[in-house]
Image 1 (spheres, one colour):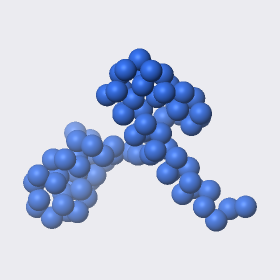
Image 2 (cartoon, rainbow, N blue to C red):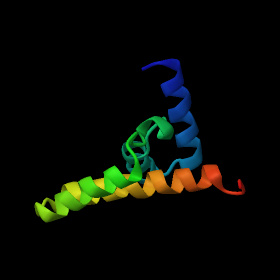
Image 3 (cartoon, helix red, strand yellow):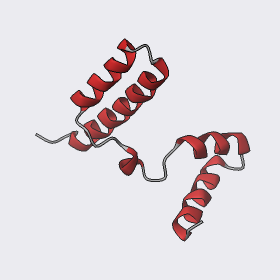
Image 4 (cartoon, one colour):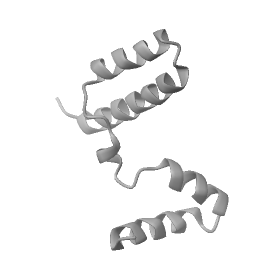
Length: 84
């Protein structure tokens, strides 16, 4: 484990305040680098892919794709808030 990973884990452990169950959930679901975890494709392309998964009745994949779409949309909205 690299120095950065140790620092990130310590930060997360500190935030969880010794709550082992919370730490387990968050450490397995939060990316260490959220920006790198965001999909690079346009939202329109991502939505089309999620809709195709629904058509194909692959609901687990569709759910995962829609979740990443929401994450990306929220991130993009926070980056442009107050501009323009």
